[in-house]
Image 1 (cartoon, rainbow, N blue to C red):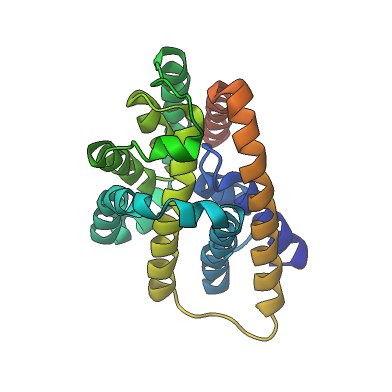
Image 2: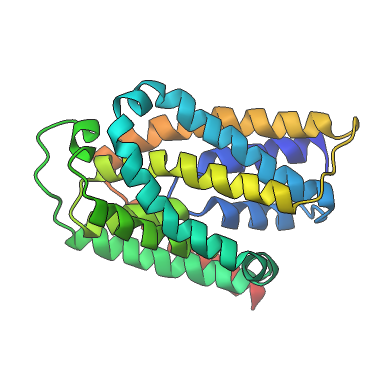
Length: 259
């Protein structure tokens, strides 16, 4: 892996982690296109740079995370299904799903189709307050149902953000409020996933590659911060249909490439 590779992968992680397009799928595809060998260090690198994206959420919503202290109970309820499935099926997920570009392509396409359908059919609940205030009315039942949907994101291509946003929209919540909930839920889900991955991934850092880790981490942090800001503005104006079409296009291209 070169410095340019580290920068590109950090950029990809940062830009796609909180977009409903599957950051894992994009990282795997880009790594393959760049012909980056799946060494122990590269596997660890792909885990560590996610910490940059998590830190971006904490920094961007540092005030809201305090204001929404009461929301954390709902976040934990939503986190439970993904935690159980991720723990029980960890080896299957890593050894099968992460090796199948066909599964990734199919996940992108199916998720895109569902996203477009939901955006056209979903009728949000009346929203006359800010997304933060609206989330205070989120029920534990809805939180758990969003968590069940998030659990599907253990399959690369599905996308954690897409799963939580689509389920939230189906339950009648506004684009802005469900996107914010997806962001906050991501701090817990990604934090736990990265921590568990680090425990399972052999430590492979030397004085020669620590610079690569820092470059990837900082790139992920900066571009994740920018993508959060941009996404909230974008969905308020255009919704999620453009992301649905993007997912379908990338998924089709990936499957055609395999064929």
